[in-house]
Length: 258
Image (cartoon, rainbow, N blue to C red):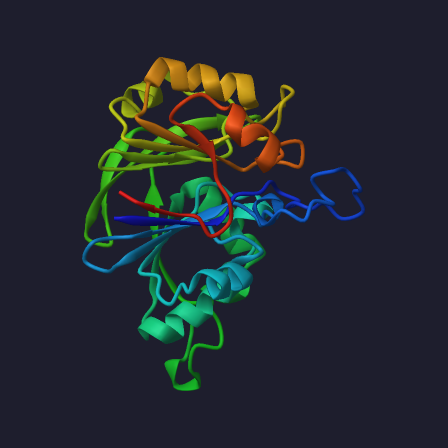
C-alpha cells in the first residue's frame, strides 16, 4: 500500500489569509499546507480517498491522483468535505459512480449542503455532477470491505461532534480528534504507522496538541508516527528535528510506502 499526504493543514490552511507570522511567511515548501486529506493506493491499484477537502483539485493535480474507487468522509466539517464537487473528475476517469462511506450524521449533512449531487442523474449528459453510491458506517469500532480491502473504522471525539478513524492492516489515520473511547484505543494497538492529528503547541478545545499527541504515542507505541492537520504554530524546520525518534511531521505531497 502507498499513502499520499494530499494535505496536512488545518481548516484554514497554511499560510493563513492575512497572517504575517514566521511560518506563514516562510519560503519552506513543507510549511505550505492545504487542508487535510490522504489517498491510499492499494497493491491492486485501487484508491481510497479519505476526505474531499476544498483543495482537492489542487491536491490531485499536484500529486498526480488520477483515480478514486472509494471516498471515506471522516466527518462533516467543511475542510473535510467541501471538495465534493471536484469528485466528478474521478467519476469521469473511472466512468462510474464512486462509493461514498460516512456515518449517518455526515451523510445527512452532505446531502443537505450538496443536494444537487443526490438528485437523479441522466448519464446521457455525462459526468456534469458527482455521482455516488452511499454507504452508512457505524459510529463504533467495525470492520468493512471497501474497494476490495478490509477497513476498520472507529470513533474519535472531536469537541462537540465525533469523527471516524480508519485502520487498514497495521496503518491508521486519525485526523480531527481530541480524545478516544477505550474501544478506539484498543483498535489502535500494534500499529506500524499512525498518521495523527496535531494542531498546535498549546492545548486546543477540539484537536490534539503536541503534548497530547506525544502522550498517545507513548501509550500506543506505533513503530512510526506522522503528524498531520498542523497549524501555523508548527514550523517544519524548527520542530521536526526535535521530535522523538519515530515521530515526524507530514508535508503536502509526502508519499509513504507501507
